[in-house]
Length: 269
Image 1 (cartoon, rainbow, N blue to C red):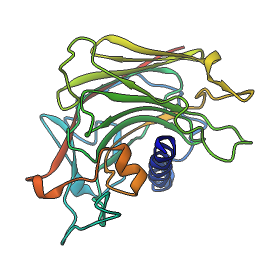
Image 2 (cartoon, rainbow, N blue to C red; image 1 turned 90 degrees about the horizontal axis):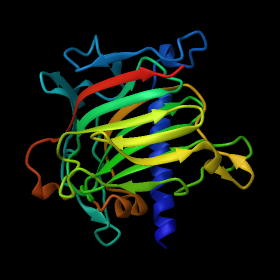
Image 3 (cartoon, rainbow, N blue to C red; image 1 turned 180 degrees about the vertical axis):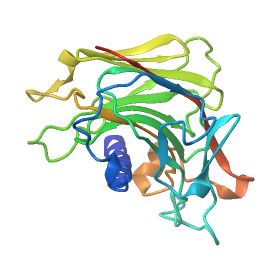
Image 4 (tube, rainbow, N blue to C red; image 1 turned 90 degrees about the vertical axis):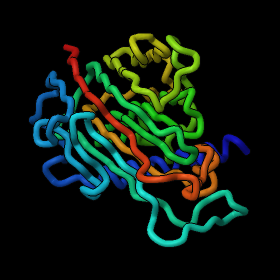
């Protein structure tokens, strides 16, 4: 039952990611002539200089001296529940940002906070046009941990390998730390392995040779852009269960906010 619910939640998230991809302007499509990776750093002093563009409504984000604030606002009207209170009958629209650049191997460093509210998911991922993914996900219902994951579908597969490469991570420097505090998350990706770190501590290494399932390799190899987002995981049932939702809007004052303080990219040859 647990694996079924987890698979259902991943189906929902991948569908959401796919909708973000389809929403990209034409200029963000595959760029065969673009550099594979360009080193840069942004503190989001302005959106124009950040090399990120919004996919969501402009009201869902703000750039100021604290960085990039991404918001999730209460849906209009009365919010009810269905399925014995397991899901909300309305879902909020949150911020989604996409980089205007691609990277093909390199190191991605993100300083961010994520709200510790059950039912809210904050994500920072590398995603390719071919649906390869390298993920960092912060679930508000489990703020003492964060998720690392990959997807790299093969042409003959009917569906992604749900849950095969997902792992829960903690904060080695401080056992009491939570995702609501500012942390520096790192994805270090080359052709042979992926390393996830937080606050300078390596928490996971996934080698390419360990991604073979049923005779096929599932290691991300395509140029990918950076995608940032905050979203409402209050439905369907499997998604809400995974995210410890649904969101209890009656207990929330103001806007739900995640903050990205900085992003830095280093390139590998």
